Length: 212
Image (cartoon, rainbow, N blue to C red; front, side):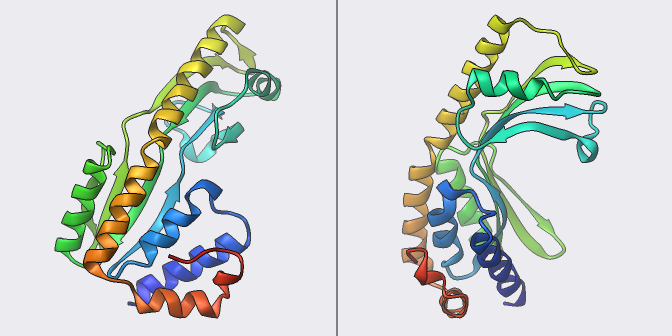
């Protein structure tokens, strides 16, 4: 599968460059080792403060801080000092995985797996003859903090918003072990992909990571 070869090459290269979220490395390797499926883009869940020129202007937005773990109050305060233009938001987002399946049956299985693992926003669609499954959860938070470089909320509110956002992040990340166990079961059913191990050997991935 040419598309999977390209996806694996991108993943292995990104891993070697330290551009993949550390807490989902094992899970990504597991998913991509399964016959007939592969990931395109994924995130282990994040929280941060973002500056947007206007509502919906995502391509022009700027992260003041973005981490894949609970954020500290002092970190947030320091980041807010760099705010300049537009609207300021605190955002907390759950883990998300984009997984391509080579056929409808595999896409259906992935959809069921995501839902069974607690990722209730899991959907799948057909894009350019590819079955793309988005494994996604419900814990999204967007809280306005200010505009045009001015923080318009009190420290008390900021602490409260961070507490809620951090709790949502922990809750959504807490489902990752169940998701990994379900992918292990799926691998037993669908089998392993020889292409994955062929490229893993070519990139010498076993020297730094434990392959599934």
